[in-house]
Amino acid sequence: MGTAAELGRAFEDWLNKKYARGHLRQNVIFVPMRRDKMLRALVDGEGDIVAANLTITPERLAIVDFAPPALTDVKEIVVTGPQSPQLASLDDLAGQEVRVRPSSSYASHLALLNDSFRARKIAPMRIRDLPEDIEDEDLLEMVSAGIVPFAVVDQHKAQVWGNVFPALKMRPDLVINAGGDIAWAFRKNSPKLKSELDAFFKEHRVGTSFGNTLLRRYFGGTKAVKPAVSATELKKFSELASLFQRYGKEYGFEYLMLAAQGYQESTLDQTKRSPRGAVGVMQLLPKTAAAPPIGMTGVDRDVDANIHAGAAYMRYLRETYLNAPDMKGMNETNRTLMTFAAYNAGPGNLRKFRKDAVSSGNDPNIWFENVEQSAAKIVGRETVQYVSNIYKYYLAYQLALERSRDAAEAGEREKTLH
Image 1 (tube, rainbow, N blue to C red):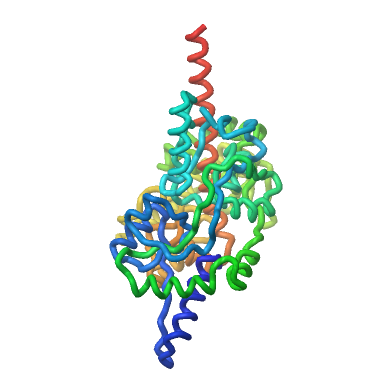
Image 2 (spheres, rainbow, N blue to C red; image 1 turned 90 degrees about the horizontal axis):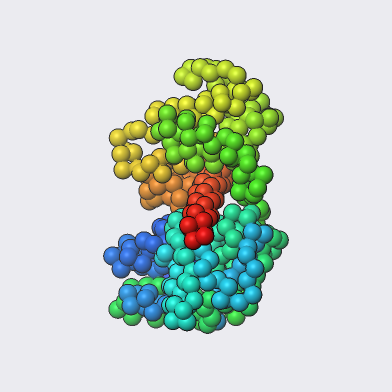
């Protein structure tokens, strides 16, 4: 689903009507890929088109060509949420921390704004990288939940997700860039492909019946992320952080990853009980915790035992099902994400997900945009959303701790000055 998927299928149908050859069809194949790798892969011939809501920028035009814009006059605006500072003008961004994907056009345009701040002797923004796995809609969810104070995104995306997350506030008065064009990218010196794309988008861009219908179709969604770093939730996290640190170290997991899983499972609530009988922070079944190889009791009564058993079970899943020879190229972040998937869907399903990823031409050692697609196909949305939410909560805790450290350092500097 999505605008890129529907446009790709429409391009396939359009080509086959134009060049009808009976049963010999031309096929459009979708290759999931992280945004920071797309243009290099295109230049290297791993694909022929990048369809990823790309804004045309001088930097991108230096290495690729673009089809006629599917969407024109796009504005990149600030979107605020419940934890946003007061912003009356763009100058109020001076000195603020802004999170952005390095490969995005937003990063380029924020850098230009910083240049103007420096030229006027204004404190520049503190631009910090977001992981490339975080999409604009993920970031807007985090702004809505109070995890991130504000975001910069395309205005049409903000309008879509503003209907889903009422806490978001669009700021069309705070424009980072205006007049942007969004288009498909293709390799330079491809005149025949350019000719076909010119003709296709004449009939399928926004403003045509097809393009307008496509925009209307994707104004929906469900809220999936809760405010993991509100004052109440951070108090819970602080109370349990030492346990996650202890058992994260003992069982070889980054402790914030385990804490994020605990938040996804129970919002860090030891009193929580599921209809299936799962208990506590990590939502374990007592019989699972008591049986080999975990062999722990009291998970329903003792939060220490619960988190201990949850970490031990995670290690059991990782060491038993994620150490095969074909997994040697898997990095630790992906190994942990796969372990979360096994925790949620079962190790048997994880094997199915990875096998299907191989047959689908995806990388079985990368979760996002690869194995997760097979998970969605085989078991539906639940496991995909489960892993995605944990990753967002993990980032939320990272950001909250960084803000806390920055505030503490600023306080120490203030004391020194006085």
